[in-house]
Length: 125
Image (cartoon, rainbow, N blue to C red; front, side, top):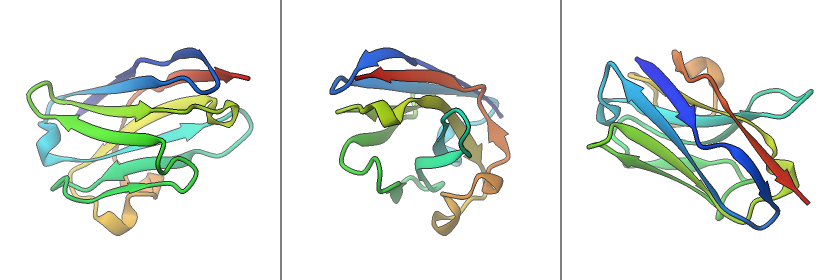
């Protein structure tokens, strides 16, 4: 599985941005997917994800109610819609995939065996 994340950029606080994660080599409908982020000097942080069936989505408390993950099977792409962005959302965002992940492990980076290259999101105040 190869993942390519894109859509990052510079926005002002309160604005929205949508990230995309295009997959190749396997259908996203057969994968559990997650979004993570890493700010300078900090560890990689779970943002949100869903298990293979796509029926259960989990979000970090810090983004709950502001970020939404969706999947377009026809385009084999997963999205991260980010609304009401804050300066503390500034980070490199990564998408990740696993064919075997379970809901309780969505937040654990080592549960994923495929990673995209990351896309930078900068939110100015």
